[in-house]
Image (cartoon, rainbow over all chains, first blue to last red; front, side):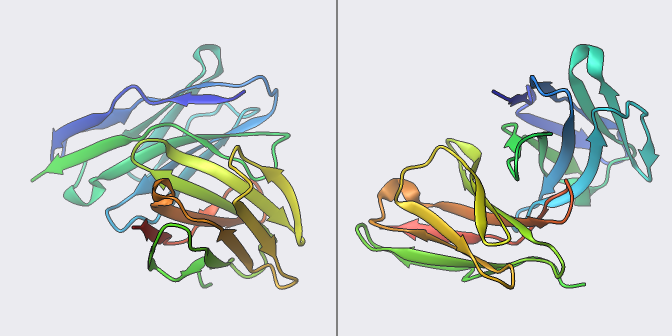
Length: 115
Length: 110
């Protein structure tokens, strides 16, 4: 069975602060994929980043960066210099390499960025 | 490129009725997955279709069914609606491992 845990239910920050969203996962698959999605109030899930289990290189993309650590089964996501438009629910998700189409989601973290 | 589209966007039904939701994937995407999102259970996988074949199914009762057409468009059907079926239903399409989601259909069962 696969499991994704986002321990932070809600985070509140002031604009321009950096914020890190935590994600811990469980899987028995040797190949798997990790994702972060953003869900604004409109409801649509917006894809942000994907990481493959066989690639532990951490990267930065604009204001987004992520820290993938296989040893601790964690896939944390950081927004640098947060903006009000970043306010949304953020979901971490896991897909097993042998699982067709099934994403397992965490419970989500509500991020509120105050001006 | 147009994104994933879902129709209708909003739906109100009464208990016992049935409902059909539609999803048009991104052009060139042959895999379509469906999810149910509720405040209590979060995002849960319903099923996935590829080339008109269901390849994977989540843990939902048989009242939930789906199909995919030759143009990759997909429909899901819920029969004998229950109050607990009120949810946001999301579909996603993919060509590789990354799924791209549509805006969802909000279903309210009264």
